Amino acid sequence: MYNLEFDSAQELFREVVRDEPESATARTFLASALLYEILARQGSLQSQLFVMGNKFLHQGRKPPDPELKQRFEERIDEARAVAERRRKANKNDPDALFALGLAYANLANYSTGVEGKYFRGLRYGKKAYKYHKKLHELHPDLYDTGVVLGTHNYVLGSLPRVMRFFLFFVGARGNRERGLRHLQEAAESGTFLRTYARVLLAVAWIREEKPEEAQRVLEALRSDYPRNPLFLFELARFYRQQGLYPEAAQVCREMLTRLRTRPLSPRILGPEDALLELGRVESAAGNPEAALHTLRQIDRVAAAEQRIVAWSLIERGRIFDQMGERRMALAEYDKVILLAADPESIRLAHAYKKKPYRPEVNSSPKPRTLGLKSGGGGAN
View (tube, rainbow, N blue to C red):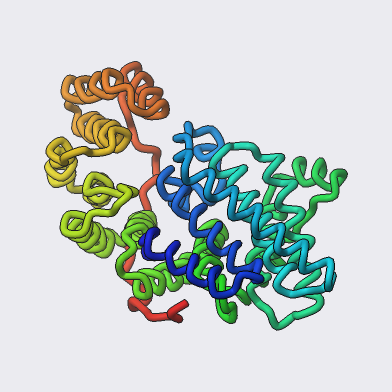
């Protein structure tokens, strides 16, 4: 699943369900695999979206594939039915508690990440937290509960004070530091959800402005899941944001080669994604001519995602504005508006037509040397 090979992953989970028909957890993991594919098809697996910033909250979402949605809902319903049956026999049944917590966490992710229904997601999240908190109290050495407990505490604890005050009265509260501790425990000692905990922990370290910790986790994920270009994509973007331009460019080229020789199906990422990020790296590194050459290659990518094409045109317009080539910049912005592929790129194109793009003062990070070697990490 973490290598984005969804058909194979789901078939293996179905085998487990057939072998262990009374395991609610097995059915919930199958639902998790289906949800992972739904989010991947939507482009919602990128870390900038997990961070839940304004861009994510207001972005347009592709509707999920109806067949995938139905299968996800059916597996969730089956898992909850098996879990409730087990709880009738034993209210503290570990399999039932774990499955119910994970099922409601999946529903919370679906509500927020797919449907954009945040308060419904909050209600599901509270239920997930309740079941895994009870399981953690009964079995403190089951560190996988740290994913739900950590996410709940960290997200709610990171909200603005005014929002936390409001949520306090509806019974939702969190603690950021406690959330980080739970995620770290799950990432280091978890059995089933260790990888997912590491992904969330990388996002948290970026938010906490601890680049060394984030880099260590991202490089381990890259090493452990070499067939997943999303981890390469996130590492390249992280390197760029940290001013590690040679390392970022190298990862972009590795990703580009992989996507050209082994295309993803479904097309979660394409060569255009790697080229756009490489163009951004070259522009940030002060090489506008190379960036323009790279970004123009997107025009020749077959079946390129039109949203990425629009953003490549925005980047080209920005570069022309910085070079003082206003006429060339305006031509790129006009193409964005004509393409009409992405609301945010259209908004920026209109803004830059009125006022030339100028980078913010001190907005680019200073180049730095790589402080960590690419590392290993567990195989989970």
